[in-house]
Image (cartoon, protein in one colour):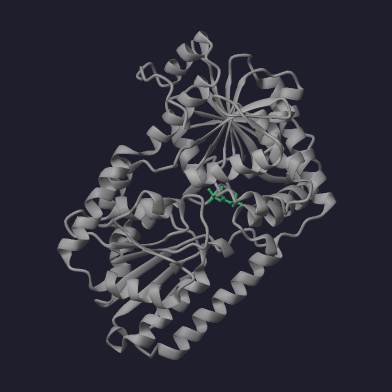
Length: 482
Ligand code: F6P
């Protein structure tokens, strides 16, 4: 029996629970990593309790073991709404101007990381491989080490990582970001993110070793592992979903209009106002497209208790109202805006039905909507992806029309080009992107990361164990350092 894989993240995607994460992003990636592997997924239950001192609850759903802890109101306020999402999230997305730091929130963040370590610690076996996800839990590795765990522990950052000057705007940054040095391997979405963190460590006095960095007595390796999707399964899903009743209804309601689709959490990092302005510019500059194209913006609300999220909502609704009022008429609404989330199946069908997928974040770790849009297309008649140069996905999806989301005219021009692109060019752009996603799918991401993680501690038993984690299928040697 090989080692177990223990996944730890703030949000845990237990199916059919009230606060299960939105489709996409970290949840999908982690679920795929656990598929067919022994282990568990540990994290927040999504419940708010009076006090966060209860015993963790274990549940098994679809052969995945979940172990869940509750958080108190105070925890949510200081750790989740506070340091994680009002400080770390804006800073990691290059928005120093939006951070709202308080000492209470910082100590709440450290307290919840300690609480996670206290609850997880008794459940661990010596040979477990532990994989911690995302910015909520940067210091969990240090807390586990302080409790005597010598396991292989890795961390993956799903967000971007800003350059050192920006990271240093976080008060007491060494106490939080320095926590990452206690992991054996820290994974990033792109080489740019990895290099930013490496430069940060060096700026704080780290020295480069043969395999990684040494910081305050800790040895850590860094790598780039672009997260992906279950490409084949997604293609199948979209093929079937394209024929679903819901998608037919949407198509009928468009009365032959072309469909431009945006799917994003309501978050300032997603560049939704800039996208609406670009769509407005398209209509302004190209009267022939008025009445012939519809932008469907699917935007589930997110982190609504945080001030900046309330503000972005007001801005987006105002802008959409302005465009619809200015260009719409009794028979045509230029922008349809929905604040709800759809099932994976309906979303896949909408991606397939859309002539243009608009993924134009101001900054994004990866953006799996871009990858899902490509996988969902009919290869014989694919739509066109308009993609921000600031999404991690732009490093891989070079068949997209790559845009700077800050340049309204250029995004409007790309949109027009996408709507008018001949079939042959659409195919030529789509085919290599699909091939890339078939080769670099979510399974490969998890295997690459885990093989490199275990390679970080080259004990023979662990290497044998990791092969068992892959169901005995993989005879792949740990990857070379990146
Ligand atoms: O790292 C970003 C991320 O984890 C995404 O993968 C996911 O879509 C989002 O954040 C979820 O945010 P929250 O848990 O705050 O709803």
